[in-house]
Image (cartoon, rainbow, N blue to C red; front, side, top):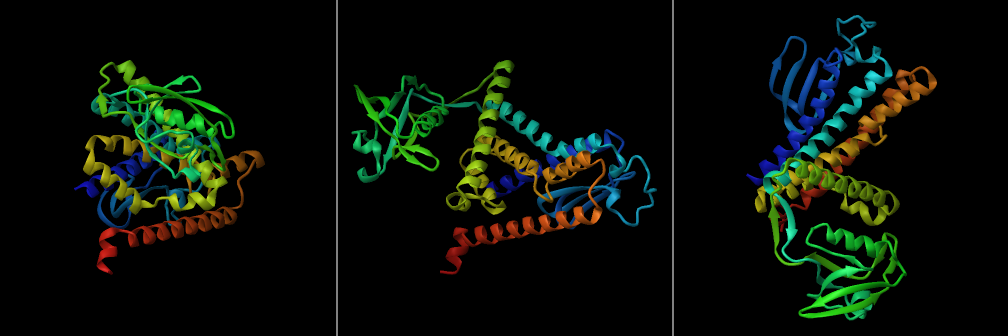
Length: 361
């Protein structure tokens, strides 16, 4: 059931994305002749007055079809309600609406999470040292820090019970490579002060520790609507920032981060684990994937929404669109590359599934 829940989450996010395109088009009177959730063979379909609605066998995808792409369409080529005949702004709204829908939906999910499930926080203030690297590679171990110590402040920045305090402490370390940082530490009833100088690494400073919240993680429901909207916005902003930072690290340090790229199998596996351990966290998982889906789609790559927006930008600068054969060639090449990457990730992650590995042992 947990796997089905994870697949259902992905299907809903794809549905939201495609609904964004569909609603943006239809609200402007632009023709839409196909709305499909999934790829592959049709499982169910309904023919509306103009649009065919379909559910297909493989739910990890979807598309909105326009009669512009139909060579045998009986709509006159100069009809103003064809997407290609609309002004650049109208087309840009349709193309970007899927991304906007995913972002808005993610924010609403986060507001729902803090209101229904609650905001996670530690029962005690500070950040707990869970594990140390060996002394030869650990600044923290060489400074005398021990497993079980609680960091209550770094450079006079106090740490409370929020789960984001771990990220705040990591930022202090990452942003100060080669500089002395004063840490205030609790060790039982004893309060200590030590200085550490983070090693300089490609991704920033490090002192060789693993962290966890201090004490038991508890959830506090936010019942005030204004507070819930604010808490959802804060979490939304944090996820967007971390997502962009992750993409930045993938580009600048591709060799070390490429193996961390996840395909649909891995995403379903992670979602299934979350659903099994904590159903409420599915809201956060859905918001996280929705934001990632939006950011990936807005990248200026062929076959993605960002690639189509790039074509519109070029059209706006040139005063006319690029020749159709160039656009089609770029889009088809990009589509093949994306499909190839998707197939590669699916094959790799399927081969790594534990039950499949046991089968061949």
